[in-house]
Length: 88
Image 1: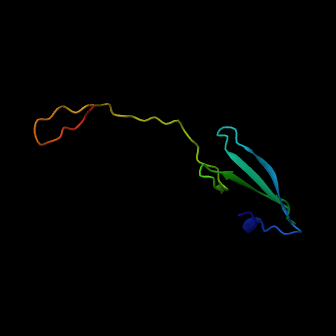
Image 2: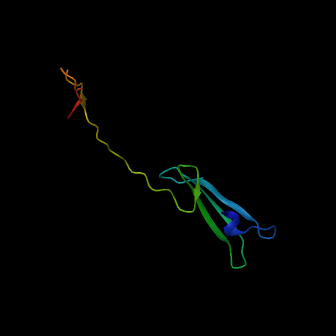
Image 3: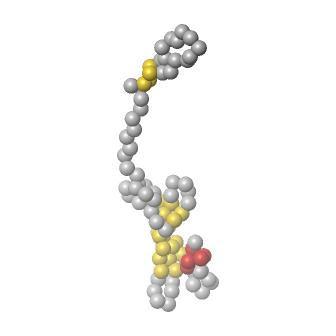
């Protein structure tokens, strides 16, 4: 992406200006800067959970809650049918 968007050359190299973590999520990001005649151009890249780098930050993570069913052992069955567990 850096080569495609910033097109570095020996005359206009790119440089890494920041490499750190965001405070709330401790996610990584980098800032890459290139000098242009109109002024410096900087692009931020954010690392996602899958290891890929994108120009948008990963989605915020929020606390999650789940529900599980409590199941009891199946009752004994007298016959060709099998008993299923009872869940509340």
